[in-house]
Length: 570
Image (cartoon, rainbow, N blue to C red; front, side, top):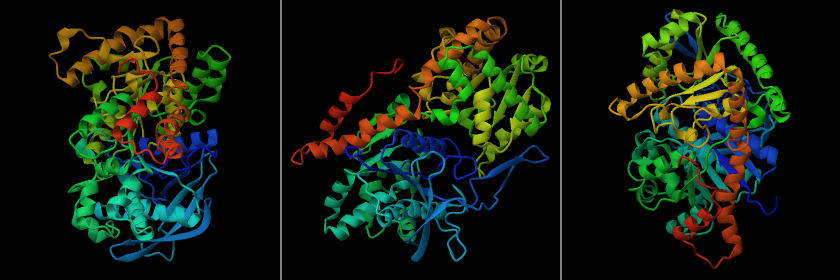
């Protein structure tokens, strides 16, 4: 590993195991999978995050069918205390953070900062993931970014590159600049230039308005300026201070998380000056975590996939019975849908044509399992969950909603469903990794073409893409009406006939699904690509010649040389 750069990976949340509830959803699970793949490949990377005392939310369904939130206090006695503490400044007060170590889940070392201990007056900062208001969020980002960097220094960990996974961590870049100005007597311009060579940045949110921004006065009052002034902070993140713009300006290179998302991201930020070049590195998932061993063994030995699939399906049905009380039929088609409850994901799209769906559900020909959480403050998201619960009550045993979505529910659903449904509004799904996990288990994707789905599944070969089934005569329809029409066309004309009448074809598609996904959409492939195209690029350039001063043109040229072949639908 001597010729590999040492990476510090910063993220606000990590989904490593359900017994460590410091994640809200896809971003955290991706970060957890990143650390596990790094561990498998023995690469020099460590994670930096926050130890959340009360989780994101435990969300259950009330008697009125509406979700409500609870916040139990978790004890993390099973984590290792490094004995290290670091101090940060929040609102003019010294805040002490303990540093805990997580390394027992087959993951690269993960260091978590914690302000929630008995003698602390600042437990509110690391209490709830994404909880509270703007001041709480800024305080959390001070702990993650500034505190995280100071923890690395105190731990004596060598770092060549800092990877900011989303904009939450950009205050670590401000701390790097402060260090260089204070310790090396560099000017702000010099310090910023030197810092830029050390940072890579991943952006996820594909809607410009959804990228976090803060008022400068509040940032200054909270202590986020960290010795910099308004003009310097504005140069980094504009006014208001946009965390994504700051990430793009502080990094030498940035990436989107699928090929389509990369094009969306370039378009979003094309008018912003002095940003880093943006490349595409498609997300992947940790195979050992998400692919069932029985399915893996059957696939690798070229045995019948239907037998292990039926066992996994029965395990899901038993799990549903235990959690929900519904009794599902193992011989009938099960379609799974598990995602954050957000309007653009259109959880309830399949119900919008009652004439089409009602007979299928009443006959039990189609069974639907849903799960997902709404943000505690998102009443629209809670409306979505409540409507799914109403469908559960209306079509008992044919529609199921599993409350308090977590990694355990996810594993059961992506292994035991027959079909995995995904129908967000395009291009709002940056990547979407649940379908990758399903595909590795021979569960067939039924999806719109967005995120990673533009790169993997082929219609009628290893899944179904609803963009490809209607002719031009339907182009006058709105997106929702078009997709609903296409969705039912595929379900009635292809999914149902294949499942019930052509089992050999279904099994062929299951095998093709695993063929397509088990490496190309694995976290192992993903982290190797990060090392080749982002982590090592600037590092190798610096080692080769200290006299070279390549600009963006040279960076882009080098990136293109190591790029993989173009994906088939991009």
